[in-house]
Image 1 (cartoon, rainbow, N blue to C red):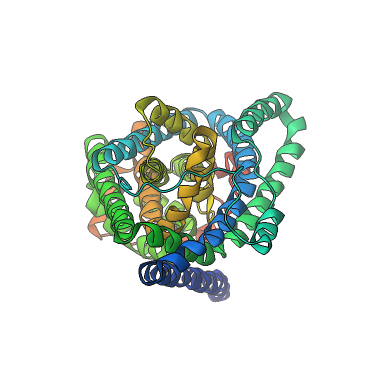
Image 2 (spheres, rainbow, N blue to C red):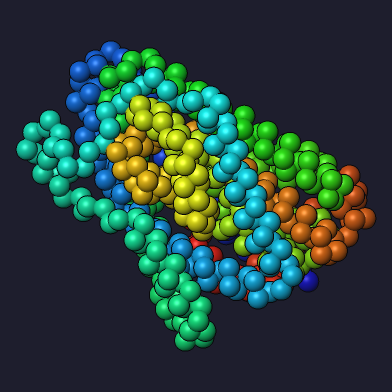
Amino acid sequence: MASQRGESAATAAAPFKKQRKGLDKSHYLYMAVIIAVVLGALVGLMFPEFGKSLKPLGDGFIKLIKMLIAPVIFCTIVLGIGSIAKAATVGKVGGLALGYFIVMSTFALAIGLVVGNLIHPGAGLKLAPYDPNKKAATDSTVDFLLGIIPGDIPVLPTLFAAILIGFALQKMGPQGTPILKAVGHGQVLVFRLLIMVMWLAPVGAFGAIAAVVGATGVQAIISMATLMVAFYITCAVFIVVILGGILQVVSGVNIFRLMKYLGREYLLIFSTSSSEAALPRLIAKMEHLGVSKPVVGVTVPTGYSFNLDGTAIYLTMASLFVANAMGTPLDLGAQISLLIFMIIASKGAAGVTGAGLATLAAGLQAHRPELLGGVGMIVGIDRFMSEARALTNFTGNAVATVLIGTWVKEIDGGQVERVLSGAEPFDEQTMIAGHTGEPAAGSTAVAPAQPAPATV
């Protein structure tokens, strides 16, 4: 028995060390982006003309993101449709979870649009529209270097093809499994490329911020700060009022007590800017809370691909910010069509560095290509908003698990009260022993179609 515990402790130590190592790398990137943004703003303020000449750095980074938009969308949608089919076969729990996720994600997107239309972030900057056919005023060396980066692939045809292929693979049944696996391996490669590109974010952010501040002055800094503050407030209101209200009415659970119970996970997510890092712990804690293993095994993994409330709010507010900054606000029809696109394209990107930025660029490119140049401003502040996105996504999935457990009567109310009151504290050692080698019941129904885990 003692040896088994020793092995468990060793098993626990290994992942922890790995996680710490990854956490340090993410901190380096985070600090580099912060430094780059500050330096870019200072250069733009003190040397406006020089700052404007650094625009190719931001343009090059945007081109790298554009290069990966189509592969990201294709792999995500093909695998996402497969996930929907598999989760739905689980029965009542899977169908209920998917319905709830679609409703809440749509609601979160709508909230982002409402707040964005109220505060009009980015208004007054009047940046130059992006024109891919227009030659920039740069020397031949810069033109040559930017020309090396491949051109983008049209997004809407890619999306259409991915949807058709996804449904075709569903119809193929077991014969389509090897193809889905191949697409899954392709997605791992694409996301790895995206992670590599995101390590250039400090360079892109420096050039983009320096150019924008050089052209518009302090107004750019004020506009970006306004967007960040509004985004954090919107996420907080969404968690406390919307999610908290539904949780209290349906399950009788107080959102603040649930958040206190998940406090250690919040610290982990805040330090890594990724809700993916806390996925195994969320599964363990939801089971300890009293939700049945089948419900947890279906709801949590599926939610990590289809219930991205924080990302949904970010996508709509950032889109409106870019449109306003470029001096071409989106009308209601364009906002609704963009919302529909984001609902589809944002699935399956949880925990992947830069996936939110790529989805934002994809939406703008598909609807208003001339706005793509404004993404350079978002690059500079994207990392500042990533924690709020991840925390909101995580909280949404925790609440969803409790709600669905209540709806299907697969939750122990007495256990919930004992755990949240502190009478039955969570045992870290039990969590490790129960979840390193034995997956939660029901999780195999959806796990194969999940995106490759990657922490920010």
